[in-house]
Length: 394
Image 1 (tube, rainbow, N blue to C red):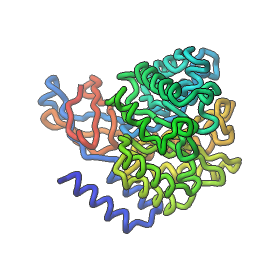
Image 2 (image 1 turned 180 degrees about the vertical axis):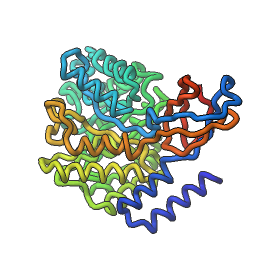
Image 3 (image 1 turned 30 degrees about the horizontal axis):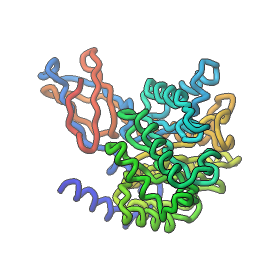
Image 4 (image 1 turned 90 degrees about the vertical axis):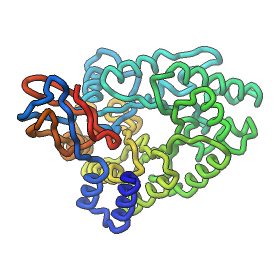
């Protein structure tokens, strides 16, 4: 009942909002923060006194795509990994887990770059999402896929899904299943499929515990939201068990007005599935406008109840598909858009302070995530979420 009340409150709150900066802050305060009760454990069961606390890792994923080329020990790669671990808590492989990179020729697997990327990101404390099992647009498949007849292609696609999902079993909990179906599907044409629902069936049979996302562009950044909504409805009606909705959000001329962005997020949110911004960038030489758009879009997404994660499609100019969109320049000086992002996650959306515990319990309000506590010279950690606002520190 409490969750239902919160949802109704958010809906009512949204209907009256003007979506200005103050309103977005108020939404974020309601949606992304909680009133916490932390039990300090048996060693501090009767403790009464000051406790310092600081958020170390947001529960909300703030991530980026990662290049497997940047896992070496050269100075730029070391700096790349340093920033990756300092300012992000989630990651996705830019190319290393795509089919045509993992199996450039039939039966010849190139698995190690993706495995190494997963290992390094995990060492840095990042959660990794999978991208992508299939990719059916013209640039997605390897040339040899197109030469297969329908029976052989189906067999090969099932083998691909079994291979990659088996490789990351117990490691990656969500995957973009068939990338950019809104813009074509070479595989479906060969197989004679009406839509991609069959792919979801195959994937669920192989990995029933994994969440499989649709993922596309031109939705928030190109007016294709109604087509995307129609496609998702058709997939669901055809039996596809969609685990979430990805929106790439590659912007060129700038981010649309707040009301337009909010309306699109509302439309995607109607399915009650997690919506994630999977590949964000703003490709512009106007650095001040780029920074303002980046900040505004991040706030809109963080304030919207349907959005469950946010991924940049790269952060360094020296390793970015659109260098002008990077957050850090090639010489590693931070750009205004990078500074805007860093300020949000390290200042505006950060929680730290000191409070007095009573009878071994500490109470404070903060952003959901993992906290470090200092009690009488000892360090404890605790993770707090919307479903777990009372927890024991360890």
